[in-house]
Structure formats: C-alpha cells, structure tokens
Image 1: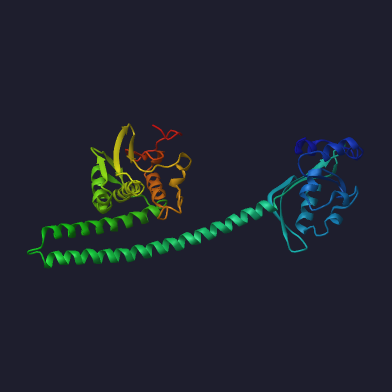
Image 2 (image 1 turned 60 degrees about the vertical axis):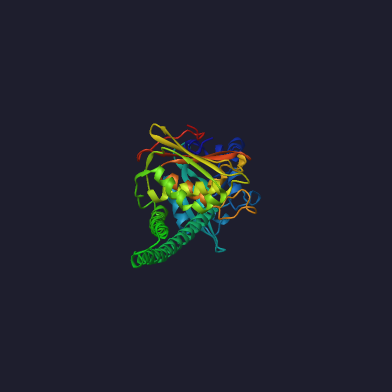
Length: 383
C-alpha cells in the first residue's frame, strides 16, 4: 500500500488499533511508523525495525517516542510539532547525531493522519537509514580528492620532466648543428646525413613531448590537428625503427595511404607503437607488416597486419588497457604502448580494436573521421 494512501485515509483511534490495519502496516515493504497526537507509538512496519536501531521486542503500544529515543534532537522535536499542526515535511539527507558521538544519516517524510471528524490524529513517518550510503559517498569523495591531488602532482611532474627533456634535446640539436657548421668543409656526406637525422629526430621528439602534454590536458585544451600524409608518417617511422627492422630483416608494406586530419606527432607515435609491437612479437619468422587503408565514407579504416605469434581471442580487449600484458613474465616493457594508442585514437574521435590467430598473426584496426565530426560506430567494431 503506497505511503500517500495511508497518510490521506481517515482512521478513527478504534480503527487504527484494529488488528487488520496493524497487520497491513506491519507487512508494508517500506519503513513506516505511526504515532498518535501525543506522540505515543501505535504501529510500525517490520521494515522500519530493520532500518531503525530500535528493537521490535522493546517497543510497546503507548510508548512515548521520546522515551524510545531519549537523544531525539531539538530540530526533530520541532518538526514533529509542525507536522501535528498539519504540515507535510520531507528531507533526502538528514544527519542524526547520537549520544555516543556517532552520526546516522536518514531520508524521511512525515505527514499528519486524520480522524473521521477531520482532526489530526497523529503522524506517520517514513524513514530510510542511508548511513552506509553516506559512508560510501564520503569514501568516494575522499578518494576523488586524493586522486585529484595525485593527478595535480603528476601533472606538475610531467611539466618538469618535459621542460628538462626539452632542454636536453635542445642541447643535442644545438651541438649537432655546431658540428655541421664548424666542419662543413670536407664533412663526410654520410655523416652529414646522419646529423640531419639526429636534428629531425630531436625536433620530432620535442614536438611529441608537447603533443603528449596537450593530450594529457585534452579536456581543457584542443589538440592541434592538421592534414597529415600517412605515407610520410610511415616513412618517418621506418627510419626511426631502422635498426630493429634491419635486425629482424622485416618487410614493411604500405602504398598510397591517404591523408588524415590529425595531430601529426601523436599519429606518428601511434604508427610507431603499432609497427614496433609487430616487430617485437614476430616470433621466429621474418616479420612481414602490411599497412592498408580503406575509405568508408565519413571514416578512414586503417589496418596494421603482421605474421607474428598472435593473441588468444579472450585477451584481445585487454591489450588496450593500461599495464595489461598477456604474458608479463615473458614480455618486457610497461604494457602502456597499445593503451597509449587507444587514447590517441579516442582523442581523434576514432576507435581501435584487434583480430588475431595464434601463430598466424595479428591485425590492429583503427578508424578516424575524415573531419572533426561525431560518428556512430557499429557495436561489433566491424565496418
């Protein structure tokens, strides 16, 4: 029976004392207690005693409310008097300090009930003990504040590291350029070529650090997006991973990749992570890595396919979470590579996923909108 129905019906004292009515109230699935106009106990639902510190066996008909709860706060006593004058009051969160120093939290609603003649016969109180809920909420708020403090400290640390790295990279670039200038006459062409690569790599790293800081604050700052030729991106990655590619005798296949609207340095880091992973988990076979792209209307679908050791199907979703490595005792690294790829793609409004067959290879797919638009993606990650 809804609480409002109980509160609005007219009952005489005789009917309120009727066993049928008592049984109805006792069986209500909500915590309800009813008093007369002298605040003496009449009846309560069993659910009330489950919520309340009062014990059912210690409560008798006619007991005064303040005898049952001697530490009733003055605020509540005033609320009871307002209700006895006809007011309908409620509160979603109300602290209740107890004599032992503890604090309970209650959600409540209190209404008058009326006799047949229209006089107020007493009050009906609905209460819900939300103390545990408030403890949980306070614990969450405490954890949130702790996380915010930790994030602020990490942010400051990241900026300090970025500043120091910029200084070191600037020094490397400066001395490389000084060497080129001071020894320009008769400088070995091959050596000059390598010096130019050092300068390019330093510039790329400095821009990457700047883009990473932008990504870490992406909620407050928009990424710098430009038209990026993916062919050029892969070429730069192949140069950066030249040592690993030559050591593994790997074959990297790509051709006629389109341009994308992206952050140049983050999308380069994405491709470098994906290609490096394919090299790393190639097993005993000579790595063959094939990079393709398909036009899907408003989307561009890219794939990076290898012939490596593969991943069990049950692990495919885990690889894009931070520090989730499939065989941590057999693999080196932090487990952040693919997680970082996932974040980069999400910041570009895209999506990333993988398919794989053990001992045959893995294909990483990712989709990026052609422009800064919102796109709905199929739930099964297939296009």
